[in-house]
Every structure is written in structure tokens, then in C-alpha cells.
Amino acid sequence: MKLTLAILLLVVSASAQEFVAPGSGLPDSPSHQRFWTLETKIDTGILAGFVATDAITTQRGLARGFREANPIERPFVTRGAGGAAAGAALSFGAGLGTAYLFHKTNHHKAERISMRLFIGMEGFAMAHNFATLH
Image (tube, rainbow, N blue to C red):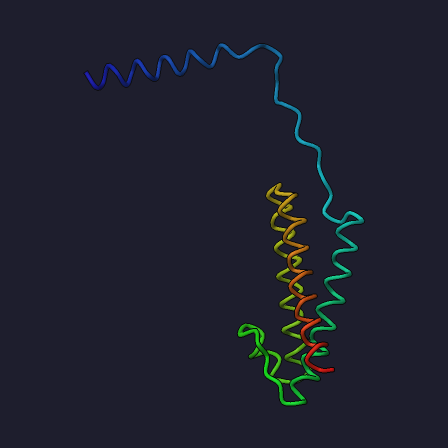
């Protein structure tokens, strides 16, 4: 009985393939949206500026005896300018890489939201550093 049912399902699924309309072909692919649009270039520039300013103000704060609040960045920024540069590159790469990952998976709204979230987080860190230093 199971063998008969399996054969019947295979025959029905094979014959169902013949009901495709002739000449339909493949559907048109969605329009390709470029990653480096003007909006992305501006957001990337803002993020780079915020990351650099955050790194500089963090080093000034550490020189005055403050402590890095971010536990992921702490091992980098306590190692001087080279470590701060590595931590800044990590932050910048995480922001841009997340946006690019969303872009490649066709989640363009999430791409824009994630980039702006990273800009907001870096902006908050930069503003906090300015507030504590002055």
C-alpha cells in the first residue's frame, strides 16, 4: 500500500510539471539596487567621523584617568593609539559590514536602519565623551 501511494505521488507530481504555461520562462529579476548610493556614502562618512572622534576623545579620557565603558573596546583602547585604531576599525567594520550583509540579503530597509543605529550609538558615545571631558 505504501509503495502504491509513493508511486502515485511521484506520477502526479511529474505530470503536474506539464501544466506550466508555454513561453512563460523565468520571471524578471528584481531590479539590482547598488550598495554605494549617495545615502550610503554620506552615512559611511558620518560613521567614520563619529568613530574617529570617539577614539580620540576616549584616549583623552583615559589619559585623565577615566575608564572605557564598552567591554568589547576596553582591551583595544587600553593599549595606546595602535589599539585605539584597531578598536575603531573594528567598530567601523561592524557597522558597515552589518549594513552590507543586509544589502546582500535584500533587506534594504534593515540596511538603512542598522547603519543609522550604528551612527546613533557612535554619536551617543562621542557626545558622552565630550560631556565628561568638559
